[in-house]
Structure formats: structure tokens, C-alpha cells
Image (cartoon, rainbow, N blue to C red; front, side, top):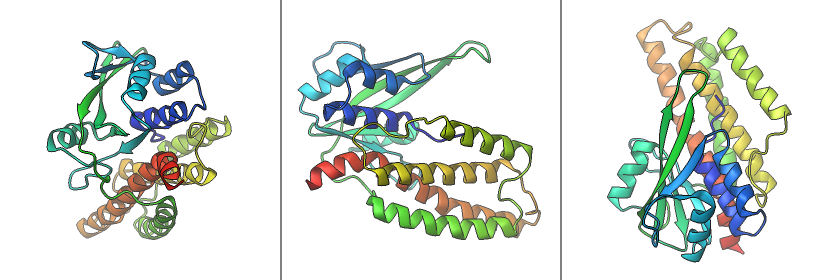
Length: 260
């Protein structure tokens, strides 16, 4: 339930590695997380798929100085800069990583195998050419934080009135799991990120959780068609704001370096 895109992990720990704050093995292990294996295909200079440790080293040799996240959705190419072929691939995956310092980007392809309860997840990152241009619609951390606070207030008011703010056993279990994970001290971002980025990421994840619970709670008290439409209208801009904030948080290490 906690939204943590694979592109976010790759960018965060890749940025920490590029800044010399973690070792290649630590970065690779943190990016893989609970998946079984990650490999990178299509890297310049490599004839076939390679492991993450080698891939990160190759990206640095290509001149990559940072990694940015893109979380596009239909009609909202958030974080993308083209060309159309890369944008289409990223939109299909709903996420991507765009390199700074070299005209390449990475789009994940996720494969699952095995029975329920013992699923083996492998990820292939496809390395593709990108256009070196400013990413689309990415706010600053300050803008993202203000947008989140405002959107959360407005959506909570509407959803509470419609009785779909997320309640019941499913919502309670999800909230309990979120709190337990937070209390366990899970590192939200890799070393090198400013405290404000950690705060914005945590708030964006909570907002994303609230939206997911509102969608999954059924119609709640919103039995009238007009009320269901109002719920959708309330959630759509909140989803957009949360995605913008996630991108701003993950990209803040690169933005801070560029400002310096």
C-alpha cells in the first residue's frame, strides 16, 4: 500500500552512489529491495543484460552525474523530456529514470513467477535514448509541500462529506501496516537527501495511501451518481499533486547539486 516506485529507489540510491556516499554493493542491494533480481539491458558498450553494480558503474563512466525520476500518467508527462518513443515506454510502465549528464533513461519491466505467497519478482531496466531538456511539470520541494497540504485539506473535506475518506477493517489494516513500517525506521531516502525531501516524500506517501483507501472503500455513502462524480473529481487532483511531490522529493538531490 505504501507507494515506493522502483524508479525512486534506483534514483535515490544511484544518486547516493554517484555522490560517493554509499558503496556500489550497498546501492544495488537497496535498489533491489524485496525483488529477486534487477538487470539492465541496452547499456551503451554492453552486448547484453548486466547486473546493477556493473550498470551503475557504466552509467558513471558515461558521464552520468545524477538520476531523476519520472512518474507519467495519461495526459500528464510528469518528469519526461522526450523523445516520444521513450515517453511512450515510460507511460506504459508509469515510471522511469532519466540520467543527468548523458542522454539515456531507464524504464523498468517487471516479471512475476511462482505461486501466491512465493512470487519471484525480476526487473529488467531498459536503457533508451532520451532528449536532454528540462523535465516536464516538476515542482520545487517548497511548491510540492504547499500543494500537498492544500490538496489534502480540500480532499479530506469532500471525502468526509461523502463518507468515503477510508474507514473500516481494510483501511484500518492498511493504516496499521503503514505506521508499523514507519516505526520500524525504514529509510525513506538514501544518504545525501535534505530533511525537507524526506518530509515531503512521507507526506506524499500518506496522501497516496489516503487516495488508494478512498478508491478501494467502494462508494461508501456516495450512492448518488453526482456524489460518485464528486469523489472522483476530489481524488484526481490529489493524485496528481502526490505524484508531483514524489518526483520533487526523489529529484531534490540532483536539484540541490545543480543549484550549488
